[in-house]
Image (cartoon, rainbow, N blue to C red; front, side, top):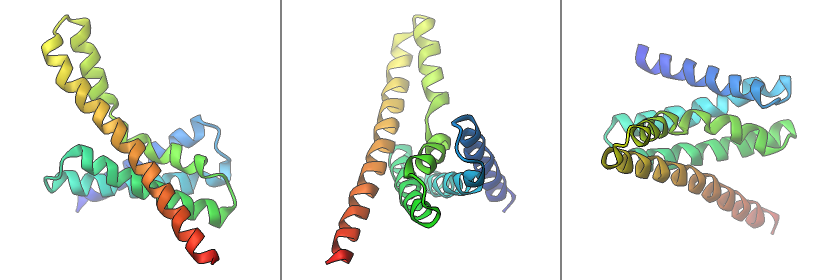
Length: 145
């Protein structure tokens, strides 16, 4: 239980912190942290239960975009404020760093799988954001009829 609380609080702090760095409006920082927390907890629950990190990143980004849409409608702000700060915990920065470290050390055989995994996770995050956007647009189009 402490593990989940630790993950929730750290992802909240990371997302809200990046909201500060990206000059998000001050009154939206709590919502930015909440969006990042939802995305990260969906990722970590799936990754810890044995789901591949690429698929878990897709689901995490999907939830970030969905909750970001809800927050954008609720607080009448652009969704980019919530989605950019929300995906920060999902970005594979450590994996990319390790890949570049191996490249700098001329160990290309170790760098290629790491770079491939980082690239696939980055693509999954982008796909998760796009799929959620398409789904929200389809639902809104269906509601307006």
